[in-house]
Amino acid sequence: MGAPQLLGWVVFAAVACVAAEFIVGLAAMQAGWFPAFATALVFLLLGLFLGFPPGAAALMVGFVASGGPAFADAGYDFKTGWYLRGFGRDAAFELAGRRQQLIAALIGLLTALAMVALFHRSYFEADLFPPVARVYAAAISTGIDPDTGAKLLAWAVLGAILQLLGGPKRQLGILFATGLLILNPLAGWAVLVGLLVRIAWARGDTAVEGAPSTVFAGGLIAGDALWSFGASFFR
Image 1 (cartoon, rainbow, N blue to C red):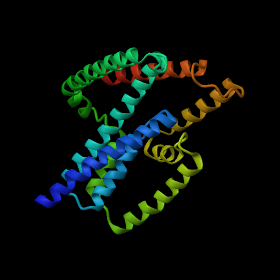
Image 2 (tube, rainbow, N blue to C red):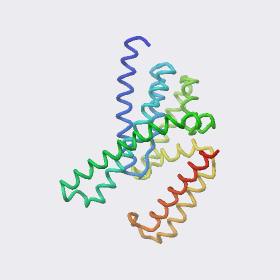
Image 3 (cartoon, rainbow, N blue to C red):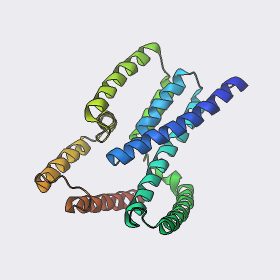
Image 4 (cartoon, rainbow, N blue to C red):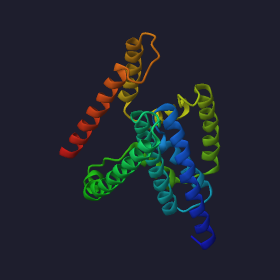
């Protein structure tokens, strides 16, 4: 890239990362999960429209995709601490708690860097790539032509309508798109079964925090993560 295009790429990547962090953070606080990779795909397509070369586009989408989850996860952590410390009633205790959480987050970051450095090659050799990574690669390799751009715009309108109908707490547009990216149909059926079990369990009670179903769901997530890691590691 020439100097003007390089400068434009730096500015675009910086703005895209900050904007994606706020979008992802808002979705995480409203809906309880974060659409980081879908948001990064939007900015990747915008970057391809602007004519950035494949290498620059790949680096940019990786930068944007890594910023969103970090921002949302930090929001989860600090919000959990806010609950546990009594909703900020004791200012000194709240600040001390936030400081300890920040130190713990930095230790976790350093640990993650070490784990990635040690084990990333074995994951790549086992073809353990998330589906969205293949979407990014396909978009970068094929580029954006006028016909594809028109289709993306049309489907973007549908996604906006779904978001509007569902409201910020449901994130219907992003949920629908995520479902299209997941190849395993059992994932969709599992979500439907989970919703039915929750409805039957709640029996009209709309309370969520501290509910037995919430604790049960947390246990399922922990068990799934342990099994997935163990199966992948031994494979």
